[in-house]
Image 1: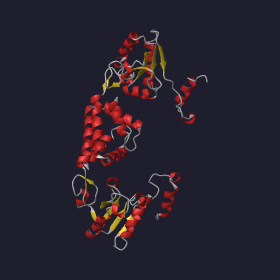
Image 2 (image 1 turned 90 degrees about the vertical axis):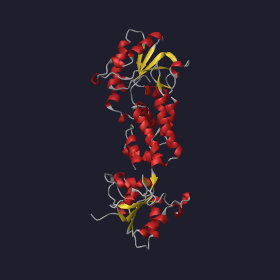
Image 3 (image 1 turned 45 degrees about the vertical axis):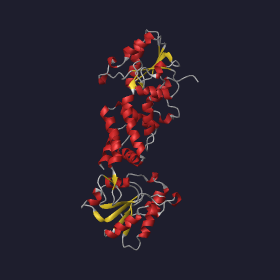
Image 4 (image 1 turned 30 degrees about the horizontal axis):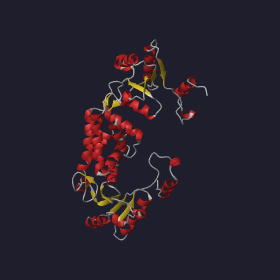
Length: 195
Length: 195
C-alpha cells in the first residue's frame, strides 16, 4: 500500500486538501481508466515546463510578451496592478476589464521585510511613462498589506497626472448584511454610492 | 495558459474538487519547488503500476497474498465483508478490527442489473468452509444496496452455523440529535443498547 500512502501524503500538501480528501482522490485515480492517471501526470509536468512569465506585465504566458500585452483589443492606457500572476486570470474571468496588467510579485509588508524594492514598481513607472497611461487600477486584496501597497502606489504617482483608482470593497453580490463582518460593513458604508 | 487550463480541467474531474479548487491547486503546483511537481507526477504513475489486488481477500496490496491475509496476528476465523477495496483501509485506520477481510467488488442492485453473480460470494463461501470461520461481519454501507446485500449474505449463511453480524448504525460520535436525519434516528432507536 506504499504507493497509495505516498500519493496521499503528496496530495495532502495541496491547498484545501486534507488527509481524507487526499485518500478519496488517490482511490479515484486508482479506479479511473489507465489513460487518466498518465494524462494527469503529464499535465503536471507540462505546467512547469511550458509556462513562462511575460517580460512586460509579469503574468503567466505561453509566449513572451503575453497575448494581453500584444492584443490590439486591449486599452494600453489603463494598467491594472495586481499582487500575483494568478490574479490576472481571476480578473480576466470576470470579463469586466479591457486594459492591461502589471504584476507586482509581492505586497509591501514591513514586518516581513518586504519593502518597495521587492516590488516591480520601477518597471511600472517605466511603463506609465512610456505608454501614456491615464489610469492605474490598484487591484490588491483589501488586507493590511494590500491597502498599504495601494496607498504607496497612490503616493508615488501623486504628481504624475495619472488617475489612481482602487477596486471597490463591500458586501459581496448575493451576500447578507447579517453575515458581513464589521470592517466590510464599515467600508461599504464609507464607499456608499448614489443609487 | 493552455498548460494551466489543461491541468485545471483534469483536476476538476477529481471527487470533491470544483473548478475553483482545481485552479488553486494548479497554481500551487506551479509555485511549488520543481521537485514537488515531478514527484507528484511520479507517484500518480506508480499507483497504477505497483498496486495489485490480493487473490485471497481482494483488497489492494503490494504483494499477493496481502499482509493482512498472511499475518499471524490476524484472527482468520472472523471475516469482515466490505463492498470495495478501499473500505479495508478505512476500517484498518480505526484500529478496532483484528480479523481478515473479504471484498465483494459490488453491492446487490437489481435496478442496475447487479445480481448475486456479480459479487465475489462463491469465494467467500469457499473461505468460510476452508478456514473454520465463526463470524462474518457485514460492513456494507447502511444504504438500500448495502442493506440488501447484508440481508442476502445473512440468508445464504443461515444454516452454516456461522454468526453473521452487521456494523451498528446510529448517530455519529460528536453528532447532534438535532441534525440527525429521521432514518438514522429511527435506526439508532431500534438498535438502542443497555447503558
